Image (cartoon, helix red, strand yellow):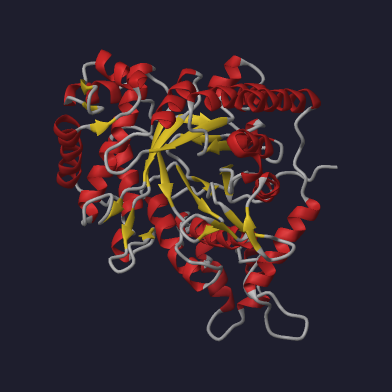
Length: 483
């Protein structure tokens, strides 16, 4: 019998922060509009350039540069919906992006994994995608699933095999970051239609969404943009992420990198709203900082920590939901660095009102999977979730009568109120776990054990036979076309 998928536990902040004042927000917005009007973005797709031109953009076909006048940008963005839903396979696993909660996904598209059985490092495969989808399904912290690693054993059709493995192993919404051309996107939409059941459900509760990365600085990916148009036409949410790197593909300042990255994202959002007004879209800011001595991309440099929550505020200024960066770490193995780098970013993004975020489970700047890291990140997620809830102050929790009953030098443990209240407190199920010979168990060892337990015991509700057959047919058609 399948074990039940636990209810989602999104972060619901009781209070909010604002990092940008009105003047700073206006400067950034004006900066983005100025870049789009005077500098423009490079667009290699003839189809995309044609859409921009039809809506008033200044297009140079020789260079591929597209410049967007401010009235065009503002008119297009006025059509973007502020709220929409990421549909799960079942209604209770929907993520409603209505501003009341933050749903966090696994990280995605890693290329290597530490094999859970052998502990050897190796390239990732489709089976890893499915197994980790099952682990994610068994965790209340994971609001939706990014295929956490890539199906490198399926060559050209890997993105579709990643989707099939994901849909088959979780009841949660799936978001792809690897469907990056028009042909693949059309197959992916057909897979989503099989999961949704009918056209109305596909649009009301889309089970699949897409994330497309821009190319820093100020450029678009031809296949990515054309795939985004396919998703938008079908009513599936599509977002755009900039990973500009301060000092290399972005200016050497945080503010400069922020505004350049925002221009990349907004240009793509304008395309979708021009072609399909009202299509669900989202904005994702995940820049890094170049290490000046090594040239390495750092997602967690001290001066770059504010880029992710600032991206949340920029998304909201443009009137669209945000996918925030969180948990991404430059650590090469589970341990203190990964634990130190994750919680602050997650908390800031949640308090700034991020609707979604991603980053759980991968190390080495989002390239390497340690299966137990997803459990360690879950522990940090729940710490932040509980902090963000704030404090519960009511007559019952103030316990003034209890304090009076116990009095000076009394023992609260004897009081019934204390015993019942202690049962409501929440504790980590990783740290402070007693060891058989005394003392406490190693946290990473406990996390590894929990991954094993989920893989041995958790089996989410399977797709029905008809859905499985249809997905296989789609995969076979895609593979035949790719030969």
